Length: 274
Length: 321
Image: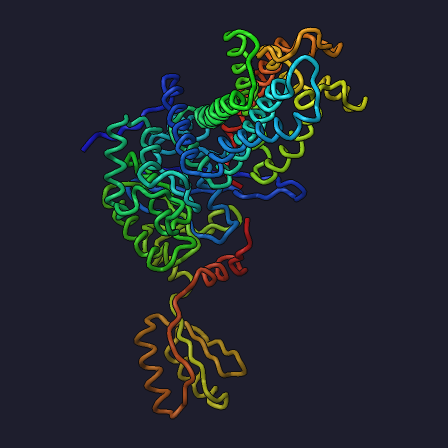
């Protein structure tokens, strides 16, 4: 009979516990078909729909619509991919499994680390699937490998930071349904009233102004620029965030992490069912 | 030796759009090592809140709670390694298998990969879940989920086990199985604090019962002491015709320990009795001799409602807290 001694939490456990809760979420991806469909099929569908439905009517000077649209689809997909943390935290709270975790001598941040890692993993798979599908339908990276890699990292990091924000919302709102509905209602306008699917200067003035300041537009602009899909001479809106999209996205990521990592960990330390 | 001590614990919730709820209002409790103590009370009495404070999930507004001398509010990280918790709702991951759930808990207790897996397998066998061990918990029955949840609380052989309504919602057969498991734990020296709404459950399992209402302990003692305090068992007869009422009441009065209560227009007569089976036999014989026809007759054991009616003057409410 092995001695069964529980050891208390320490920094060393931060990594072990984080990995164990991450593994829990990875197993879930394998077992729940919905997540798999969301992760694999939806990105493929979006790439095909947007490129084939709109490429005939939307004309982008200097490049193809397929080249233009890919950064937009990447951004939209990873932004929506980050919402899963919110509903999953709310669901775990409802199911009482958060209570179980909180009575264990584990690191207090581990569940959140595992949760946001799960989203990161899903988003990484989605990115790979979209890029492959994109290549098949004619998307080309028109920059260097390091720039393209930076684009992928920016997209994933932005979504990762958003996962922490969503985790906090999930623990605060406590209802998976509300989280899903609210993120749908907020994120659809946020991703559509942007430069993701059409150049923002084609939008009516109020929407154009919203789109130019929209953080999603900065993300799309950064990715599009880094993939080399912005043809030379294309006018960029005279807005600081659009002129300096990469630094804007990095600042945005930093702000979200600085605020919501500590806030989520603190929230987690006091939540319980009911 | 006292293992769990709770003194003057108070907790007030303020739900949105409603007045404050005093979940605990000066709770006192002491649980000796190696015994089962039951917190008996209706929904909303504060049982779950007490367990949540003791298991470090919720902080009280005032008062002190210690486990093995450790203050649970000040040193939650020192309490967590020695406790096991199994709640009202099975806190298991639906998408993991039974084995994976237990292994995850073991790993989070930092048992090490090998020891954790071995312990998980051992518990699966102990809880008779071998056939289902590699199926996701999603497909488990209610009783199986509870067993996995309880097994999760036992991964490290905790020194103290908290069971929050361990059998609420279970069918009678699963409930009996759960009782067997809980009883066997104390044989191994585990201290158990369990909450329940069922007098019968407290009766079967607990060495000592604390009756709780409105966030306070209103009575405590062994099951026998509590039953005695509310007058023990009752005899109940139901007559075919109300005209026999006077004669029957007289017979019951002679065999009871208090004045009989008459209802339903004289057709139903109830009386407290000290040794109910013998009293029932005598009453039936005399009623037979007197030629009185019975519609129904029997003994009634005290219920939680009786305890509450006696102790608080109100019925045990069943509203959600």
